[in-house]
Length: 172
Image (cartoon, helix red, strand yellow):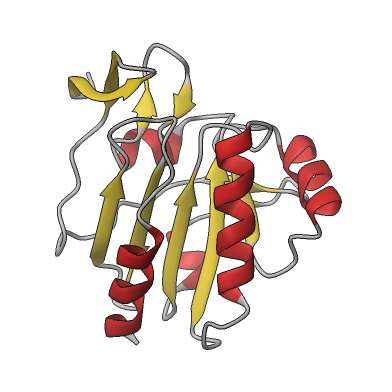
């Protein structure tokens, strides 16, 4: 049975349970299986040797997730080529592709955890009560180590972008 962390995050002030381990900086990044928009399987090894920024959101069809993902798409245009940016949510790959087209988000890749919650459970970011991922940013370095993690305590808030970007600048 997966570890449960009751009250790890809140949604509009109400406590929620995260399923999975609480990742720590320096830990080996867990493997996962996600679906790309073309339904191909993507795992950690798919981008081996790159620094990966995982922009994790509950659903692209909500205002805060929309803003957050557009911000990381914009920032990704300034990143060196050895940084790969992914947005991970439980949205269906088709919904992600629709959102991506409407938002003209062309600098990041979208991955869906709807099928297995593989990423959510492995990274401790699955909200049990909602069957969605919580809002977070995870950076995995080229050696597959977690080099940064920010789990946003209140799901309706945006992440601290400057903290993420400053951490990323130190890694490359």
